[in-house]
Image 1 (cartoon, rainbow, N blue to C red):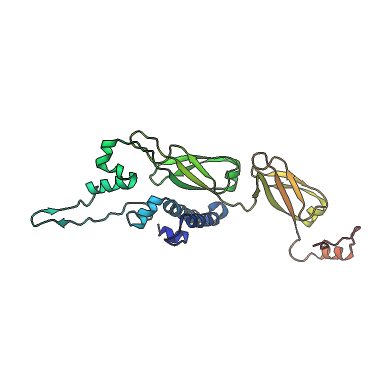
Image 2 (spheres, one colour):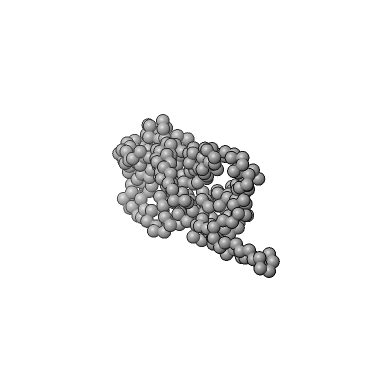
Length: 297
């Protein structure tokens, strides 16, 4: 994987908010659901998600910045040099594994001075596991209706994440006990999962209501029609009343999120190209109730 900073398009000094904003913008743009037919969309989105998972974790980001892990989170082997105390009394560092100093530094960094290896066995202090932060992108319909998604973790484990109906973009779910392990019998930390909702070109959300635009022909608007309309629960038939126009708003009761509704806004579309019969008719046609649609605008 390339440098995660380059993938997200942020500086190495970017703060958490900037990294989160960059990820959300790219995730919405490159999500496979909004790029049907593009073969590289899934790979691009996967790279964006992996980059964010690394940089949104403070500890892993710090280790990456120090060169201890690569962009995929794998340990970087570092050759440890040997040094000489005095002639005939050489000391060597092992090229792999942990030295005594490594272990003491690890416990000191993770748990403070009380966590140094020499102190840990003596105090036996119980400490709750660390909370772990992850990100998960779902489609608009999945967020609206609810779904269970499987999240693959960097260590190869998986979590089944239940997305409640009506989940908002940016909402953080807490899975208790699914974070880092506790020590000396203390409970594990939690998994904090930030949800990004990919946009859907057919729908947008207004609270628990769903709004969609429906293009109709001039004939359908004037004479009325029965048309199939997409909803988050599947397509339904909608009666278009005669004499409808652009901006006419029709309600589909109970077709929104939870107890919300779906509102369908009509957009009258004039046929492309020449229509000589229609043009000839309009030249001779005079409405019974003349009106000016620009009055008051």
